[in-house]
Image (tube, rainbow, N blue to C red; front, side, top):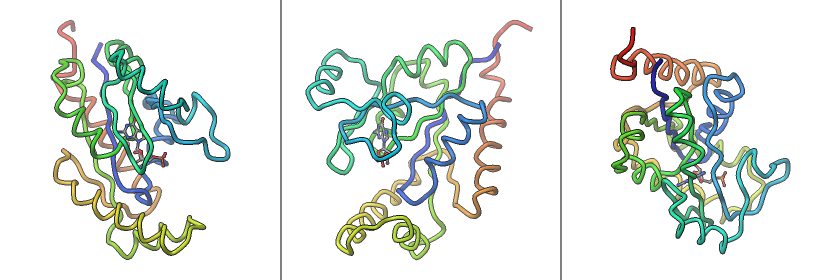
Length: 199
Ligand code: 5GP
């Protein structure tokens, strides 16, 4: 029996981190921590699958009740990780993957909870350079120049935090990225400190 890994993944939009997290969960390698958010669902998103979509008032109540491990405001919306999505799984030896921003990551990193401290592996995913980032942001958005410029500034600001993470993945091709992403989890499973005392 080994304890679960908390695989925390951050990176700017356009880095491909969400796709990596979703695929890992779809392949059964880890379970995805479904966050709460006050943002509106996008087309194709379902409540309880991508996020728990809740209003600000409910979000505030959950903060007061101490239900979140971390929470932060990102691009004008609130996001938070529920304790109930993470702790029980880690204690049962299940690996959990979470997609959170740099502010949330800093809160998880500074947690004093021994279960979280032992489980945490944090990775920053980033595009190879600013040109590629811009191309990716433009490629998928139908937004105005103004919005693209804002997203780009936010992404560049977010990228300045990569040194706060234990690991960094500079994006190449989809398959290569996924192979490296999964390899890190597989390697972390071999850590002696995660293995129980029996056997
Ligand atoms: P989106 O709304 O595009 O799905 O996500 C916007 C940003 O919020 C992304 O950077 C994502 O990593 C971050 N995010 C998603 N869930 C959480 C969470 O539970 N906590 C924090 N701090 N950030 C989150």
